[in-house]
Image 1: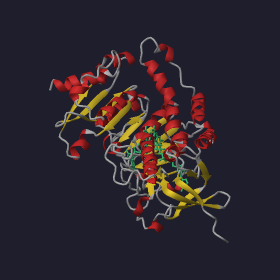
Image 2 (image 1 turned 45 degrees about the horizontal axis):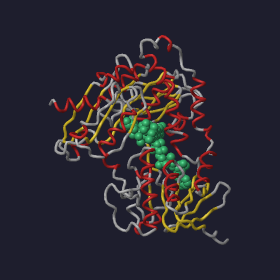
Image 3 (image 1 turned 90 degrees about the vertical axis):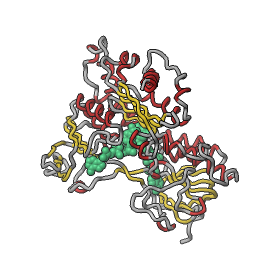
Image 4 (image 1 turned 90 degrees about the horizontal axis):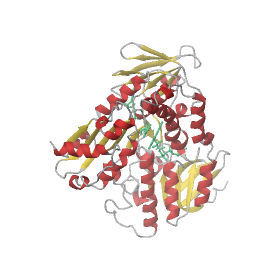
Length: 483
Ligand SMILES: Cc1cc2nc3c(=O)[nH]c(=O)nc-3n(C[C@H](O)[C@H](O)[C@H](O)COP(=O)(O)OP(=O)(O)OC[C@H]3O[C@@H](n4cnc5c(N)ncnc54)[C@H](O)[C@@H]3O)c2cc1C
Ligand SMILES: NC(=O)c1ccc[n+]([C@@H]2O[C@H](COP(=O)([O-])OP(=O)(O)OC[C@H]3O[C@@H](n4cnc5c(N)ncnc54)[C@H](O)[C@@H]3O)[C@@H](O)[C@H]2O)c1
């Protein structure tokens, strides 16, 4: 049988998640033609199994507890969450796991969609295996961009591969709330979902190898652990799971054995122990790219895969392992879309200068992240530890966020904490962490200060409105001046 004739296009994007969509969009805006290849739902993890459904599950509980923290509304807010309505609202955000709206968006942007599983055949050439057994071959004039995301990483726990368990995909699309839930992993996903399900009525136990939110400052983890405990979650820190079984089969209870010999019994087990880049099965080994299993596809700041000569292969988003967050993947996508366009037009021949639109420099200094627990954690830039490790002379300044007038109005007895990590030599902000109710929206000011390298002397003149929580900036700068 003759090989199918390739379809020629300027840019082939493998993976139609939030990252891939943005690469294709930016390439189109630059005047190039783009094909998006997707094997599942256009929109990817964030829309259907991660950010949006998880935040939709959490929001009603946050609204209720916010009302309960204010004398005057507290008594009126003593009812329970309407679990059916919460799940229904969550499902509305996923459009019932139907991607028609995103497919329509791609069509409107002039992006061609090919449904199927892609693998790279040769330089600039991609084969797409369709569900009906046929194959489409795509030839890119300029670039192939890998935006295949990440997959859940299962820890090496005896028996885990033999029992039914939830990944975050199952938890975010759950149609019922288990009576008892055990969560393995107290990172971002584990903490958020543990609280979400506890507030929906599950009896939740969290198993943390070290502490809650181990990659965030200790005070952040401690306040979130208190928040979890306040919702009835049992948090077991410093324990490791050694074995998992469902003695009565998949329909029966799950029993997790810990390294101290104790056991935890539950109806569902959620494994939330991180994710691994989806870099395998793409045919890259045949091109000479040596990749250990699930290793990130390393890229330069313009998104070019460093292991591939001639600069035709790019990657962006979770698969690169740089900053596995939706907004950061979309940032990388904008950079890649612009860089591919500029190179195609001969406008970008050398390494672009830092902070140009073709260089994802923020990945190194200012990655913002919000943990949507109650209290929330909002963090950007370097932690004090990371700053010291990378050779900065730093000082930190901390504050009880509840002492700020805006916070005290928001909730009675507001528990919170704020920290700035300051560069001792240059007097600029390197990192910021805010912990407390509704701190998410405080974060962008810190991101702007870090990216803009705003000197503290000038930051002093950014006057926060009274009485808002942003006054935390003034209090932090005052505390720093008084030292
Ligand atoms: C529970 C949870 C909650 C999260 N919440 C947040 C949050 O609140 N905020 C935030 O910023 N981040 C959050 N994240 C992280 C965020 O979901 C990811 O960073 C983001 O979805 C990555 O986007 P991506 O486009 O790189 O990958 P994906 O969204 O995974 O998209 C990759 C796409 O590629 C497709 N694909 C893979 N291989 C092939 C192939 N060979 N051929 C064709 N198609 C292929 C897949 O089907 C998929 O649709 C969360 C993650 C989890 C697990
Ligand atoms: N709000 C958000 O931005 C948000 C929410 C959820 C997830 N995410 C992203 O999705 C990705 C996955 O989230 P995640 O929470 O699974 O990853 P994570 O890396 O944040 O946390 C994984 C946790 O599992 C622990 N762990 C690893 N192996 C273990 C084991 N064998 N036993 C017990 N604990 C173990 C780790 O110590 C860590 O605390 C991350 O990149 C995260 O940033 C983001």
